[in-house]
Image 1 (tube, rainbow, N blue to C red):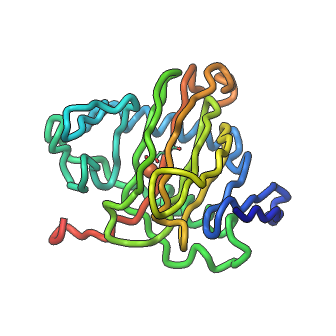
Image 2 (image 1 turned 90 degrees about the horizontal axis):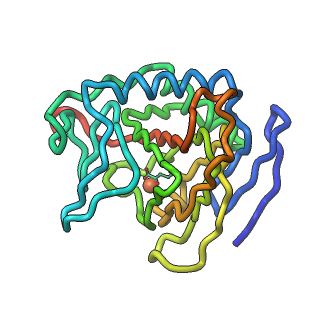
Length: 228
Ligand SMILES: O=C(O)CCC(=O)C(=O)O
Ligand SMILES: [Fe+2]
């Protein structure tokens, strides 16, 4: 697997884990991490609750999730929380879309990489010390625009695999607080997962998150209210 060390304009490190999959450690300043934590608290407070998603075969995800813009439940997006109370999801804020565009610009050597990027859903995942996420593809979107992933709190092992199947080859990446990971292009539909959280590695005083890990993925659903 190619690893291309580059440097972004702000002087941070940029590592291409696979073609179209880029890791920018420490991309989000502490102040913005705190603001995001506050925003996530607000979304978790309602109108849709943060919940352990139930899977069709009876399993329950160890991660807790709340969505904005569109509600994801296996395996589709809806405007209302069809599997937890029926509330309408919170609106996707303009500032978060702007953050997504900036992420694409910083992740790419092409300064126009963010042009036209209009994420309309975010999945906010909370991992306690034991939570994990199995290998999966993000494929319920009807669009191949990149996924922008932000991590806050405890470091995790993020396993980034291939587009064919859940198995090897994969690359294990440590995603720490403030890290950005973007996957698009040939990596947009790569399998990925979170096999491990490293409890106690976060900095509660800096982020406002007492424990655990928050991950926020911005996506373009490709849906409109008439199709969704
Ligand atoms: O927590 C992460 O870093 C990944 C989350 C993820 O893959 C997802 O929400 O689909
Ligand atoms: Fe995913």
